[in-house]
Image 1 (cartoon, rainbow, N blue to C red):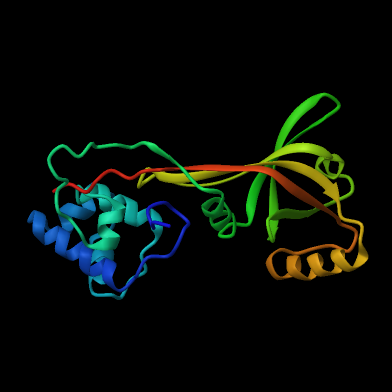
Image 2: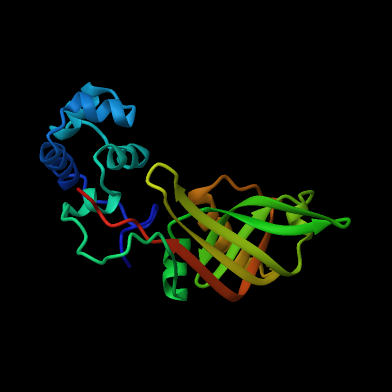
Length: 222
C-alpha cells in the first residue's frame, strides 16, 4: 500500500528534513521565503532542517505547497518532473477490501448512520476493529443503543493542506453483543483505548460490503 494518503504509515522523520532542505536549495529559496509561503515561523524551519524540531502532518502539507511539490515527493526525496505526456491526475482510486481494512485499523473514530422516531442522524463512534467486524460501546440512553439491522459506517482521513485523503464505507448489520465472555474481552480491549463504563452496551457490525477510495496525489513538479 503506497504511503500517499494521510493516516497510512508515518514517514521517515530522519530523511524528510533533508529532503525539505534539498528541495528548498534546488529552488534557490531562502528559509524566510519558504516560511512566508507556508505561514510558518523561520526559526522552526531552521530547527527542522537541523533535525531538532517535530514535523506535524499539517506543516508537511504546507511545506509541500510552498516548495511547489507534493507530500509524496518530500517523503520520497524524488523531485524529478513528470515525464512528457504524464497526466496531472487527481483521480480517486478504488481501494481493495484488504486496503480498506488496513486503513480502518489505523483509526478509532468513525460515523454511524441511523434514525430515531423517523429522524435520520449520523453520530461519531469510537470503535475497535475485531477481526473484520466493527465493535463499539454506547450508553443505554444513547440513540446508538437502538440501532439494529442494516446500517452504514464510515471512516475517513483528510489532510486539507496536502489535499490528500481516503474514505472507507462499511455496509453491515448491527447486532447486540450478549455473550458475557465476549463483552469482557471487548471491554478489556476498549479500556486500553477509551474510558469505558460498566453499564455500557456493546454492539457489533457484521460487514456485508466494504468499499473505499483514496485520492491520487499530483505528480511532483519543479
